[in-house]
Image 1 (cartoon, rainbow, N blue to C red):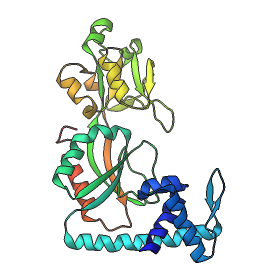
Image 2: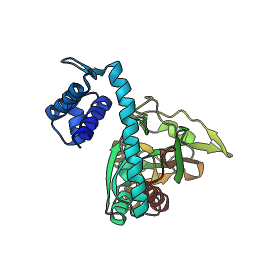
Image 3: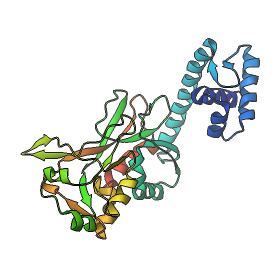
Length: 297
């Protein structure tokens, strides 16, 4: 077991790039991780890392050893998966990556936790393009169409974005009758954190997508400030329906131009294609597909 723990310390250190980060992942101090790696190097009589005061990198021997260790852990994971499959009960830690907008899916995630109390969700919210296989995620949820051939995917719900504004703003500035009328309005935009570009508003005319140049009153990489500023009457925003469900229900926001907006996006759940679908992953995939929009997300 001590040898297995040392291998785990080495792999986490290699993947995170520091003993401090590895210690956080393993629930150990950086000193304990460093000592475990040092003992491993001593037992193998080889140096696994180049280390200095600023950073550490793998030696050539370290890179070769990391590949072998990953295969060992994959085999252990496969053995555990077989045992879990045999028990048929979803249980254990489930590591899932979600986009930042996924924070608004909390009611559905809470429902999953109630339905499967033996599964411990480990959620990572980010809009960066994660490497599902290399970073060890069991599943990821993303908007848009999946493109990674190494992953299996399932569409768990399509949605139509909403153009929304506060009643006070519309009283003050007028109600746009067509998308072209937005040229005279204050538009609150979401900006992609990866590309830096403004995300387009999905308008269509006669069934064909229509690109409209919109004024930019402000932009943000997160959705929450757009919601708050729209509610404050500071402009018009384009947002997913689950993000503004409560605000529309209580009249703080109203939906506009619905006949011009096309169904533009979808949620997909993805998981590594080469792995057996464990009960916990299958339960998560099925639950999200069945409940994502039914629960009012």
